[in-house]
Length: 445
Image (cartoon, rainbow, N blue to C red; front, side, top):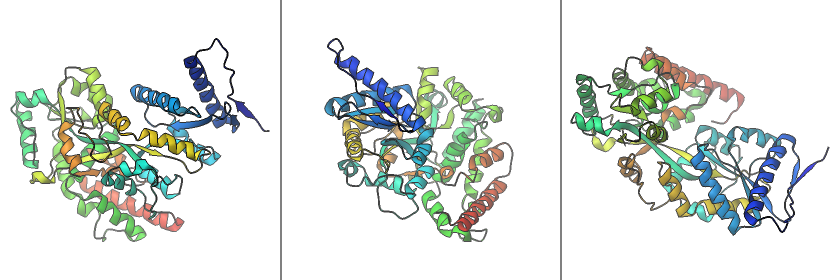
């Protein structure tokens, strides 16, 4: 069976341009859904090309922002119609069908690196936008591709930096300054404990909060995380308990610090998840909270009067060692199978205009990937700006293992009362199991 979806519309004298644009978007969106479901082709309005833009953020404010950008782009490019799609889970199935979106945004990490290693994305190195990206930030994309390719599969659009969220009023009330060393952090917790204040709010029920917070913060500030995992991946099936670097012989100090932090959370932490923790912290029930900037919007909604800041967790006695946990929250790519590469590249160039990126990151408590970017004006995360500028950051250790190593589940079991030594040994054993399996299958690292 051969079928097609016709987007051609008649421009009746009584219809306004704005109404026609809305109708075109509705028709295009419906067509995209039909194409995805049936494999039918699309007949555009005369010579208008329809681009599908799969955008990974689902917050209404972000969707609205990109809708406004699309309107501006279409006004300047009347030969292109862009349809925003926020169902990221359909991306891999669309690759299998041979009908991927034309432009995508993704949080860039392990899975994206695996896709890039399979040559899923076009090389963007020749775009003018590529020259505007800080090379240190661009290297974070390369860090996830272990095939040794020299292409640029994605351009960073937004960087999020996570530190310890703290209640400014509670800190000021008890005369506590932002700690710059581990000893100062311990003293701060002791001061709060003695005053009957919960030092750190825990949300053990949601394992990911322990991975990105407790585990990543205590390891990233003292260990060369990227170098550690480079060694483990390079070892392949030869990795074992006698390897030069293992979880057990590298992360032991971090476990000691995790033990201390867990002992300074509230008694009901095992039964509290992310949403409950946000509500409690917004209500002033703890001095600190190991959570990223993605929580700030909900905290502000829960308590508009909350005065919150963020600082990197110090895990050594040298203040110069402090680093922040970052991740590429939004990276832009063009799937290699797109039917409209030239138009897709035009849209990407539009997205990387400095004012577009600056506005997005200023509004979303994130940092710009551009060279000579202006400082983040949001005072809730402004304290992290110098660390971004100084390249004092790391990508979290919990994000490096294959999904076949359920690291967050293991960390959660440890937080519920397990042994730190057992946690690290389990990670070593699981890492070797997956490495051996991959070697037997001839899988990529």
